[in-house]
Image (cartoon, rainbow, N blue to C red):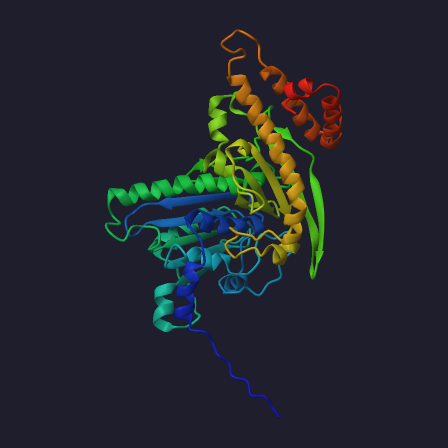
Length: 425
């Protein structure tokens, strides 16, 4: 018996409005567009946030390879029909559209592909038009402001300009022309620069190619924020580990690299200590920093392996996976959230425990150093000896010899329990 097929096209108006709430905030939406620029081999990316009341506009400009008319049409399709390479930062074919309409009602993309010709290809996704027509349609004419800005930005060669207009999710509903709205947009620009400095710090430090990546926000160069403070001499890098995964259709390697950051008195300066505390400060910045293809997805927290603790606030670790493991990690569209697979969670419990032990020892050693070295009777106490013990533990963890040190100290305890206690065992 033949089966009849009924083709049901989703309502463009209803679906686009639903997709506005997929989970982006302003900085993460900009970051998703930066992903696209990096995939287009851009070396310079400019974010320009212009306040002009209800006419305020956001521009993301890059010097990548640009797009032809056909490529631009495909880029504006919800669910792009393209194949992503293993290290591509994109995944679902939704980012450009969903990130943009989460913040604005009018998205314009202007692109120049040919190095020798100044032809600009333009497409506009206007939610007002979509609501009126209830059709999956884009327009091909930019507003005069965007057209002028794009022509100037792309005059010297290929690249792409993404423009956000009608910023209904960014500007306050009440008095969008006022001083508070202007200050709000300036604060958003600062938060965006801070977020990009963290998310793309590896690309900004070393773009994994011949040319370093540069990102600017309103003309200010974004300086990479390294969560592991690797340039600080007091940072302790513990042995890295790799875990091979082969579950269903997902195969790949997960790399775990733990770090213990210096205590306050071991940083090069007080300013450095405050700087590396991070956007959410020390306690909430401890934990796992999960990277997908070199791009930071989540920053801090222990993913349910253990609780946040003041005594382990110096413990941070990178957890890296490639896009081949996206299904296993359940990377979301906004690239802001993953679910740690059970197979990895179980393997991480031991290394995370060792990392936190080392961090606790560094924290305790710093606390001892800040306390007086003798009691009220004038007798010297055991604090300096415990600091030596903390140093031994940190060194053993750094060289992968912690189990050997445990065996040695158990033998010391059996020979002379007082000495073992003095060393903190």
